[in-house]
Image (cartoon, rainbow, N blue to C red):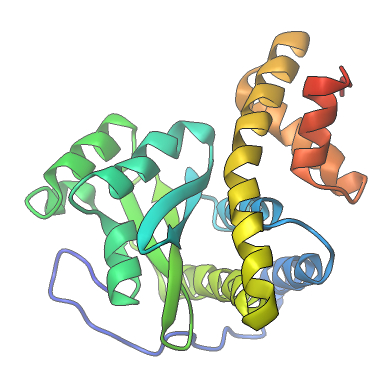
Length: 251
């Protein structure tokens, strides 16, 4: 784990306790693992990853970026307003997400104001977005790192071992799902899925706008409606969004 102080590295995935207080965590992890066994597309899995971690850790938000041809590409963020902060790590000189991806280590920053010399552009944008604490969790299997899960807190947060363990467990589960899709004959299928993930993002943004305008709600509530409907119908966000955009379905 890295912070404003010199880094210290511990075990990657310590085993969480089995106390009664951990039962909601275990239930969420179990449900997420079941999701990975169902025929969901990549984008749906990663959006579910971000949303579950945000809710479980009571965060301002979470985001996911994946490597494509060696370059980190923004995939999804909850809430959507964090998209620019995620994209900054693709286009800018650095940040916790890029560092976690590059080093394969957790990067936890309790106070953005303490590392402005490290990533001036990123810290300025984060502060402007109301973010005080951030953490980058590498998405990896063994020594192969394929992206990063990013955690955002609006209030100063001393990232606990439990916080980072929970996020790492979710990130690892999603990473195994993606890595397995890349093996041999599945390589082309994953590439097609990643391309579809980028295209799906556009359709989902259009659907969010339509639902928000129809019900006079903000885009985040619109997205939650779409997400709930997709999960209830056991289908993908892309399929529901296409129905909203092209078939005039309204939730």
